[in-house]
Length: 294
Image (tube, rainbow, N blue to C red; front, side, top):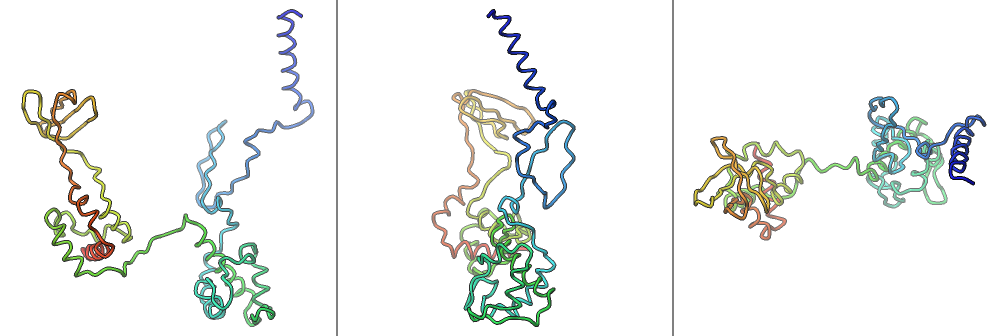
């Protein structure tokens, strides 16, 4: 068989193969089309541009396979009903007591339409010592079930995790004394820290800012040139090869790094010096004090 004939047969075969689905009235199946369908739970996405497949963004609720979203309004109504009728045995927040933990209950986790939970609420479990609550209406049973589903959602879905907005630990007076002894030489509650207590919605964020501060502003440096001239300004670029400095008059100069001396003051030196000395109480006392600076 000649080479030209072999190529012709190959092309003919490919054409026939590509036409086969149409001839059999079949739709071509793409690998991507076999991905599970995504039903957005939160915000609507912009319509995709023609001919371009939209990217699938999965929220944490869907990724965790938590089923449908609980009815928040029903859960709100169900909380006092649960506290009045169920918490004595199943504990605060359904975390368990005389009765089992309902947040980890297989029945609660698998009952997507609340029917099984409602059945147990109505009839109880006499063999386990749980009485029935037939006096509760169907709507109230549903609300309690939604409250339990909401507790599961809050426990499992890290996308909803939220730090405490108030701080109960720490001593304000001890924090003020610590600030005066260790921080006042660089900071002032009437100057750079004025109103700091209103800038952090969560105390944990302020604690992290104190213990692990970061300076993302422009870097000021002093460059000593080969001629012995000292220039101070903003460090535009600095690596093993080149150093670029912009001085106050707007002039930019570049040198080979190995030809100059570069001095970069460490603005966070005081924080670094305190890091190995802090105790948990020190951080909590200082944070509690700073939160009072409004």
